Image (cartoon, rainbow, N blue to C red; front, side):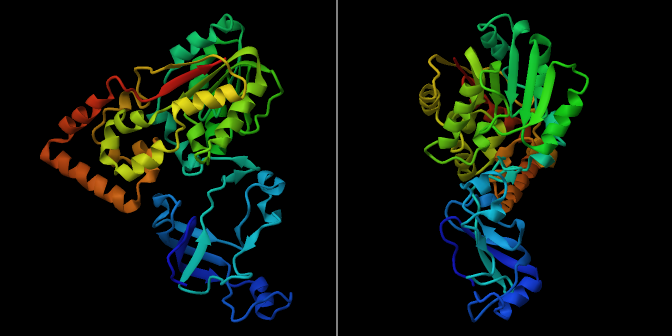
Length: 390
């Protein structure tokens, strides 16, 4: 099967495939559901060699595996609870379609959330890997403005704050000396493990738990302030921004009356001009990243739709990489790149071309000058935008 993948589909070059007893049942029509001629096989490892519209280019050349089940609706109760194998619309790899004992396999690309205990994770970044390098490369941005906004609720030392999507706990650690109590929620196990180790001796007023932005594990009206820092663009949303609205509704639910919500996000202009190294990436990759951020006017509409009245913005004059930012050789360091998920939108071929370009400028002695010229565009634009809502 070598046809071009359609919308939301990808094609896999099969490198290895096993047969199990289920395949034998199908071959012998033991269940009375087999269709002949038949290609069995559902235990496959291969490489993505073609993608259809709507599939991230970064999927090209990725090594992938396919099992018994190749699809599910992603919306029913079973899927939302992490039991997609029980989905009434589950689709199976070699039942009613060709199996994998062939040169090519043809599959849906799952744009539904990656699941861990039924919750929503990043749809394009592996944060178990990122957790190993994040604290070495990244710095919390917007802490002082966040504290200034929170102080409008009351003295900061009297407040209970939730850091939702706390990652490795960088922002939580920065807030901790200034507030009465801190709750930290993070979905990714790797990031949460780093946060737990970091805040292990912080005292009884710090609570860490695994949880999802779309279903926060907190009671109604339980915190005074809530922060979400550079997280919502990982939701597998579409141009209706329905998942953003669900996340904002959860924020509204757990905030006490008069509480404040501070969202750390970015604009398309900041993606285009706020980072010197984005000038190395192809326009397609930058557009893919920018499209993950809801426009600020739309963010304001969604916040008001769930019950927030006052909304304001601030652009801090800070960089997310801190002292690691102006490293002209940074793109050559896989750990440096891993700390910014924008790089995942470049295909392996595009990344090779970028690294060749950096090495060529480095050899010519022009790399530092190019970096500073590219970074000049950041002035007046910034890298992130803080949005406060009450």
